[in-house]
Image 1 (cartoon, rainbow, N blue to C red):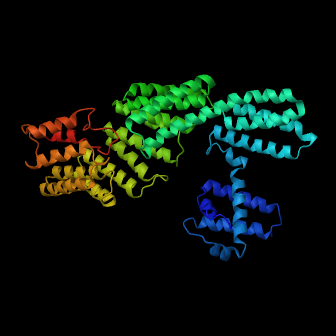
Image 2 (image 1 turned 180 degrees about the vertical axis):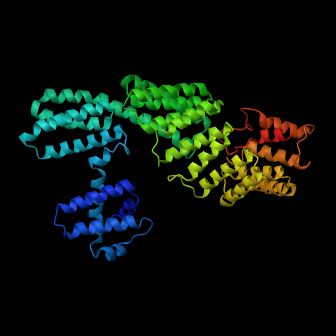
Image 3 (image 1 turned 30 degrees about the horizontal axis):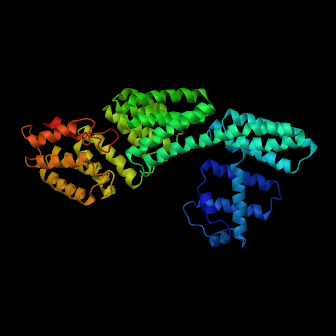
Length: 497
């Protein structure tokens, strides 16, 4: 029985990959009789699948479309041709899709496969070519620190040369292997340490703050030792990421910026680690650290620079554009902030459904509020609230801004009703990451202000104390960059008094 996921795989091909497969199928068909039924059915099935990307294509539909009862064989044969297409040199060396390191990795793996196949049917005329190919693979693998490929190639060469040149040649190659096996193990460990960090930060927080700090310090010490032994720039790359991650956790943003700048210099110097997306990643981190320090003009330059390293239709570009939005907003350049939002909402790779759409519409409402267009902000906010409903994440910030708009428009009854609804919502939600200490204090302050028609009076000692606490830095109730609270509540209230 054919793998049921083959159809989904083909439906997921990019436009470039579809053109590549179509070209390969047509050229393969041209090698045989043009009336070759199997080849024609493969072409017909492929075109049918890509023309119906959103459909559930069953075996019965395939049989009806192609006129064959051998559906399982047809699907498997087509899938084999698709895989052949995706390993063609013209695809894996396409510089607009893959960086130099990836392309070299793919090519070396293909050459190594060719060597293994040729050795199985060895003849005297092949020996010199195989030896030369292995030498080339080994040299390139060392240059680009492709340890997995290097170790396999050394093993192949060890037996290939040993049987022809004797024990001395065998042992010479064998003596090289332990060092590169150590390099491979150390580089995998460095990569694993990095992924443990991002998985804990960005997906499921399985480590407490103290455990995360312990992980970072332990990993850095291990990687420093491994780098000293191997001089591997792959390890050094991840080592610098963990160093600036630790500095970020310690809020030492100047030190984090220093590590980022060192990493940029390293990437430019060593082609074994250079990737466009890695350059973009480092500049994205620079944006955050300079933003935390309030250096918005410098952060904006880095935000735009980061985008130059990403493909036009990539998700990373949309993320970098979001960074530019934050920088513009904090710098009070609301026109440019709105330009960024329009770009993001219309970007091909962004998921603008449900939460994400609600998020960016809320951002647009914040821009309008900052520009004192309260009517426009209220309209967008209602649209965002309709999408968000009672989902978490942005709901409290949406509701607080809604109350602020009603206060600005002097709609006191609506503000009172919205505040009570928010209070009940937070009570239902309970203690979660969404209900922060700052949010709790903002609601308490609003309820205190409600007693005086939402007018702030500095003579009200309770209200004054809460406002002062909200205005402080580096406390549990402080405002934070990149939080859902784009409009700083404490500043808004101070400006109204």
